[in-house]
Image 1 (tube, rainbow over the protein chains, first blue to last red):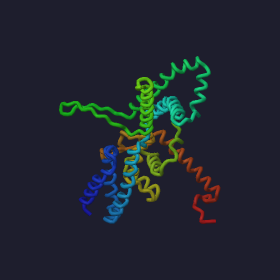
Image 2: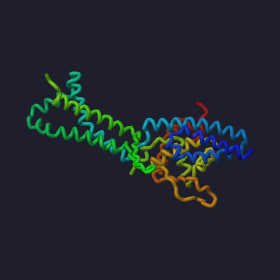
Image 3: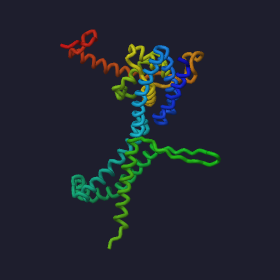
Image 4: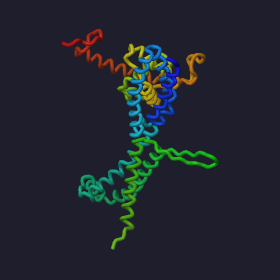
Amino acid sequence: MDGRILCVSERVYRALLVVYPKEFRDAYGPQMVQAFGDLCRESVERGGSTGLIALWIRTLVNLASTAVVERVRRHAGIERLSAKDRKMAGVGFVALSTPLFFVAASLLKYGLGVGLLFDPLDRALMSDPERLRVFNLVSPVVFLGGLGLALLLNVYAVLRFNLSREDGTIVSTVRVEMKLANIVVVVVSSLLLGTLVGYFFLENFAYRP
Amino acid sequence: MRDPRGLLPLTPAVLHILLALADEERHGYGIMKEAEARTGGEVRLGPGTLYGSIKRMLADGLIEESEERPDPELDDQRRRYYRITDFGRRVAGAEAERLLALIDAARAKKLLRAGGALSEGA
């Protein structure tokens, strides 16, 4: 069997790598093609054209299954987070917990009439004017500060800015990295901030006939 | 220090790659050949499985790319070589211990004979 078949095999395999995500292809495509080329030569030496066909069948099955895995991992954002990303998500979740509790308690109480979370807190604060005064002073800092901190840290974790010069023009690009835990913190903190700011405007500036 | 048990259980492909790199640095095709030879042809890592696993193992710190070439004269300069890290060695050891415990359990329940061969029914 001449070397042309091996060349064509390598070329076809290189073209088929398009099924993988671009980042994966860029990082490992050349090595995969080289390894496949080695496998082709070995299969032909061992089993001639039958060996090459058997290799192609195995390779196509492997290509299809692993491409699905790589694409699902990429789209589901289940790439492993770096230690820094995990820390940011962890700090974000902790910072979110207090405002999340108070918003949930208020929504349950005034939306559904369920005072399970709200009533014990209300009693504890109303029974002691000093405690209420401290709560009124500290709570905006804890709520808004916590939400702002969680939002900023995790926006920083998922957004990548890049400035480059192309034909004399400065081009800026923004890329969102699919880091699921960090994105959850960004979404929840944005929703809570929106709820709190909306509530603030409704309470203070809404028209009341 | 990271706990190696945090990454267990390993996938068969990851364990085979760690075993292939335990004694020397190898490139992708070298890893495939070592795994195939060691298992008598039972394990054939495809390029997709191999490099998908390598990508995650690099991210987990189990292996690293090697700058050195075992034989620069004879080897293709485009090849990338990989070597096992100390952490990768500890993870492979922890996985081997986990599998050993399973084998001991199988032996205790008489699923395996003392020599390790599969029992042929009751």
